[in-house]
Image 1 (tube, rainbow, N blue to C red):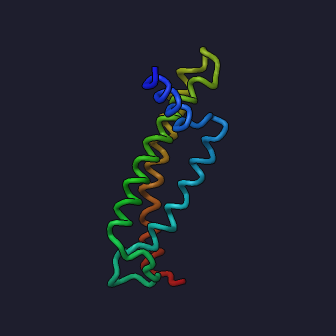
Image 2 (image 1 turned 120 degrees about the horizontal axis):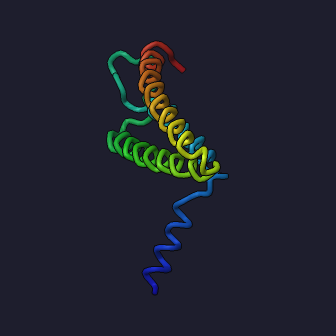
Length: 122
C-alpha cells in the first residue's frame, strides 16, 4: 500500500499538467546563455568565461538532455489526448514533425552560438 501511494505521488509531482508544460519548456531556454558562458574555445573566444568548471558543463548537458526527453515525451503524450479521437493520428504526426524540426533548428542554431562566442564580447 505504501509503495503504491509513493508511486502515485511521484507521478503527480513529476508530471505537470498540459496547462503548465509551456512553463517547463520556457525555463529550458535558460540553458542557452549558460552554455555560452562555459569554457568553450578558450583560445579564440572574445566572450568572457564565467563557468570554468567542466563538471558544471557536464551537469548542465545531462540536465538539458534529461529535460529534453521528459518534455518531448510529455508533449507527444498530451497532444493525442487534447484532441478528439478522429484527430489523434494527425496530432501525433504533427508533434513528430515539430519535434524533428526543433532538433534540426536547434542543431543549426549551435553554429550561430559558436559565431557569437568567437566574435562578440560582453
